[in-house]
Image (cartoon, rainbow, N blue to C red; front, side):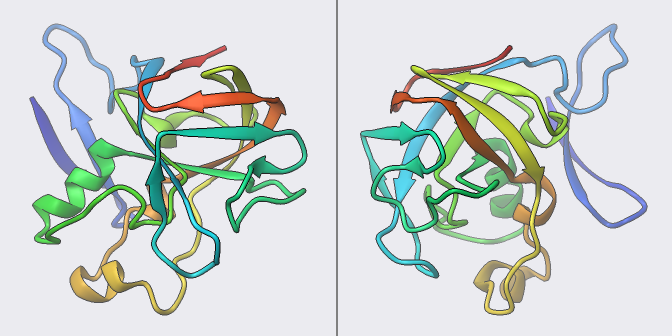
Length: 173
C-alpha cells in the first residue's frame, strides 16, 4: 500500500510499504515506464501528449519549447507524484499539466541522484536537477497551497540520441 508523508521541510513524499523490508519511499524501484510524452510549442502553457518523440544531444525533445543546449532539456514527473495532488483535492489532472515532458510510473524519480544515467527508449539521459521553483502563476500551488514539481520533478540532458515512445522502459544504468 502507499501512504503520504511530510518531512520537516513540509515536502510531500509518497511512501510504499514493503513487508519485511525497511526502505524509504520506493527507492528499490530502478525500472519504470513512460506513460505519456508531452510537448508544447510555447513556454508557459500546458503540454500536449504525443505518441513518440525524437531526442537530440545538446537539445532535448525536438519540437518542445523548453528544449535547448542547457541542463534542463527534458523534465520528468511520476504519475505517483501526480496522484498525490489528486488526493489533495486537485481534480482533472492529466499528463502535461505540470509541464513535464515525460510522465512515468514505477520509478522514484526524486530519489535519483544528480549524475544518474537512465536508459529511456533508445536514448541515454543524465539527471541534472531535482525539482525546480514554481513560477508565481502556478495554478496548482494557488489552488492547494503546494505543488509537487519543486520536490519530485527531475530534469535530464540527452547523452545518446534516439526515439522514445509511450510504454518504453526507463532503466537506471
